[in-house]
Length: 271
Length: 257
Image 1: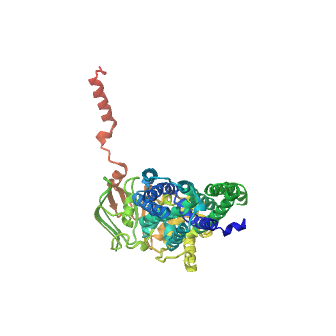
Image 2: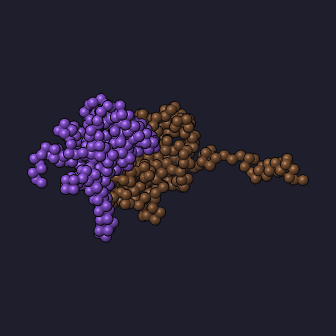
Image 3: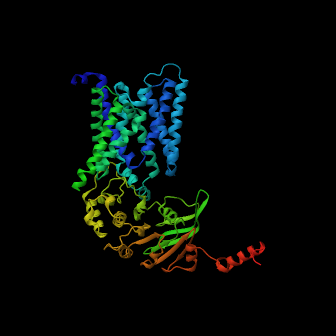
C-alpha cells in the first residue's frame, strides 16, 4: 500500500483531504456556532449552477464554480444582512434556483457530460494539479482572513448586539463569513461533492463542540477530527473499493455517534 | 454635562412608527429607568443611543457627538437571550470581550488584561467562576458576567437592557445594591418592562410607549401611567354604558316588553 504514494493521483488525493480537513474544521466551526448549516447546504447546492455554467461555456469547472459560489454566498449575505429572519426563505430560493440554473445550463450544453457525478458526490482520485493549486490558494486565503479577524469574528458570533454596540462592523463580518463559506465549499466539493459537503462542515465541529471549553479549542479539535476521519475514510474507500466522499462522511458519522455515547456515559460519570 | 441628548426623534420600522417626537436628556450622574410595555420602543431607543440604527427625524448626541463615536465610553449589557448559546466560551473570556482593541492577529490576551478581568469579576462576586463555561451558569450569574464585561472598559455610561429578567431571587449578591453603588461614579440607563424598578434607587424615570414622558423625580406621573396601561374614559369603560347599550339593542328587537 505504501507504493501507492508514488502515484500522482494518490498524492493529490492525500493532499486534497488535508486541505479539506483544515478548511472544513475551521469554517465548519463558524458554521455550527452560527447555526448556518442549512445556509451552507444552500450555497453548496446553488453552486451546481456554476458547474452547469462551466460545461456550457467550456471553461475550467472548479474556477468557474468558485466564482459562482462566492457570488451566491455574498448575495445571500447581502440579502440577509439587515434581517436574518428572512434567512430561511432566502436559502430555499437560492438553493433551488441555483440547481435549476445548473440543470438548464447542462441541457443547453451539447454532448457527453463526463465526470458530472464527480461534482455531485465527490471524486477525490480525479483531483488535478491545477485543482489542487486553486484549493491551496483558497485554504491559505481563508486561514489568513480568519486569523486576522479572529477576535472580531468571535465577538460577532457570540454576541452580535454587543459587537455592534462596540463598533464592530457586524454587517461586513456577516457577509465576510458567508464569503469564506463560499470559498471553503469549493475546496471541499472535490472531496465530497456538492450534495454531501455539509457533512464535512457540520459533523467534525459538532463533535468537538461537545468537548470544547473555548472556540479556539473547538476549531483545533474540529480540524483534528476532520483529518482523522478524512484519512480513515480514504483508507476504507481504498480497502473496500467504495466512493471516497461517502466513506469519509460515514467515518465522521460513526465518530459522531461514538463521541455522543462517550459523552453521555463515561464523561458524565467523571463530571 | 449632558451625556445623552435626544431631540425630537422619530423612528419607524417599515411603516410602523415606533417612536414619535421623543426628547430626552441624560446628565452625568443620572440613574435613569426607562419603563414601558413590550413593543413600546424601549429597545429601539437603546439602539438609537448606541448608534445601531439612525433616527428618521430629530437629532441624537451621545457625549456631544453622533452616536457610535464613543462606543468605548459606553458599557452595554444586552439581554441574555441575544447571546449565542452554541458558542463555547469561558467566563473570563467572555468578560475579556469587553476590551475592544483594534489590533489584528490577536489570539491571546495580556496578563494585565486578564488580571483586570479577574478583578472586575470579583466586583460582581463571580471571581470563583473564571474558568467555568458561561452557558453552565444560572441566569443571574450570567447577568453579572455580562455586567462585568461591560465594566471592563471602565465606561462612563452604562446601559442595561432588561437586567431584571434574570435575577437569582435568593442570591447573596444584590444586583440593585451594586447598581446603586455604581451610580455614584457612573451614569446609568436601565431599561425594563418591570414597573418594580421604580422601587429601587433610581433618580430619574422615563416611560416609553411610542411617546416618551420624563420625570426628574423617580415617581410615575399620570401621563406615564396612561401610556403604560392605556387611557380609559370612565363613560366608555363603566359597566353602565355596556348595560345601557345592551338594553337598547334588546328593546329594538322587542325582547323587553
